[in-house]
Amino acid sequence: MTTHKVEQLIIATVGFFWCFLMWFSTAAFSPSIADHYGLSIAALGLLASSALWMAPIGRIIAGWAADRFGAPRTFAVILAVCGAVSIASGFTTDYTELFIERVIVAIAGISFVVGIQHVAQWFDADEIGTAEGLYAGTGNVGAGVGALLLPRIFGVDYQTAFILLGVVALGLAAWYLIRGEAARDAATSAGTAKEAGDWRGAVFVWSRYIAIALMLAYAMSFGLEIAMNSWLPGYFDKGFHAQIAALGFTSVAGVQVAAGTFAAVQSFMASLFRPFSGFMSDTFQRKNWTPLPIVAKTLPYAPRLHWLGIALILIVVAMLALTLAGLAGFLPGSIVALVALGLFISFGTGGTFALVPLLFPERPGVAAGFIGGVSCAGGIVYPLIFSGGANIHMGYAYTAIFLFIPFVLFFFWAARYERSPAEHGIGEFKPVSE
Amino acid sequence: MAQQAIEKTERDGWYKYGVGVLFAEMGIALCVCGYSLYMAFAGLGGFPGK
Image 1: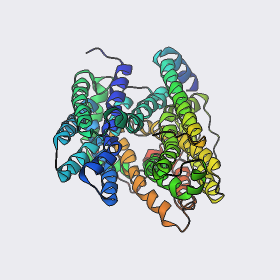
Image 2 (image 1 turned 60 degrees about the vertical axis):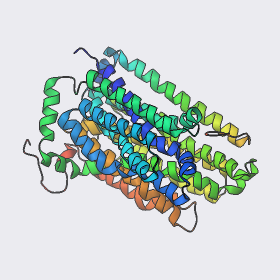
Image 3 (image 1 turned 180 degrees about the vertical axis):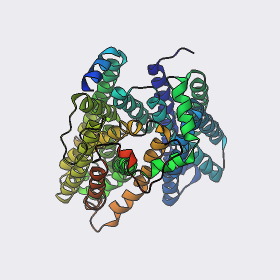
Image 4 (image 1 turned 135 degrees about the vertical axis):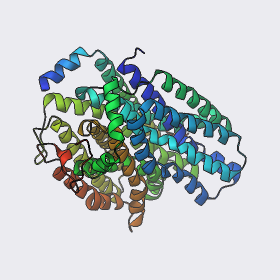
């Protein structure tokens, strides 16, 4: 079959966009579902959090499956299963059944690592940042589009929305299976599948210091992004209630709209600037910029490590700025810090996955699964820290000082090797092929 | 290596279109954020409702 890497990029991006749309469609209709079944606030929170349950372990398995069986087959199975269950959920009348079905549909979120692996198998090292950024950034917009458009198109008729989303997913599964090619050539595809057959290869990746450092970097960026998505509306409501009321939003619905607007700014910046971060990683590579101390300077991909290091430092700075603006009760300052945080988060997410396929070229799916999967735990952990302190504004500083600064220091330490950082890890574990 | 990368980028036609798309996405992000924040700070509403 004649194809082109851009066609493969488009297939992966459209598939991922639709998976993200399905992943967050439950949240988009949660008020309608709550109204239909008379759910309590606790039950609504459980429904909202269920979207994340499958991500950590599911992404690890999906990454391995992409290496072993090829991205097109793996992605098509995810689309088909989630699509079929989404259709079924449109006909369900029992809430327990609906809840279980929507948890299964949320598996769509694991498709991220499959597309990362697919794109990595097609694009060259010098353009991987832009290609992965376009894939991930454009696909991520599916979440925002879902929140923005689905309730406006379908109103409270979430059943029809779930059915149509599922039908389109089945069509995309067929398209992915027919037009998708696992890699640019048979040798690359076969080599990756062979490496994935050895389970010790997965343990090898998980035990490398640089893989752990990238996982923590992604937890600082994407993990923080999804944590903020759920945390920020409540934060602005409680932390800036008087200031929001002074803008004219005095009713509960009005405060919700204003707080939601401020929260959405972070999400939009983090998603839509992600391709730019991949482009910047490519630019650092082309210009051979290596400004940071300690971090390796002579590795073939050293400039990309420096770009990611800069992004991580900026995230820490923005988190501290968010606390300072909050303590000062200065709403515009908090919004500026939030816009900056969204931007720096995108630098971190784009910068991480511009590196992953280059560090582990023989196991891109396994590496993407580990880094993209475990880091999702941040989405569950950070809100607990944010809400745990006596002052609602201090949580960002606590997270930055006690978690993120150690993560950054570990990144610098793990990225200091001037030769094959992937050789350094916990134990002397090596797969048979090495 | 840096020189190789530049030559490769110039050879591949898709790259400039890819960069065009990513700049368009950045423009959309800035427009949506700017409009939403203007609406919110003017007390008129904002994303994602009225």
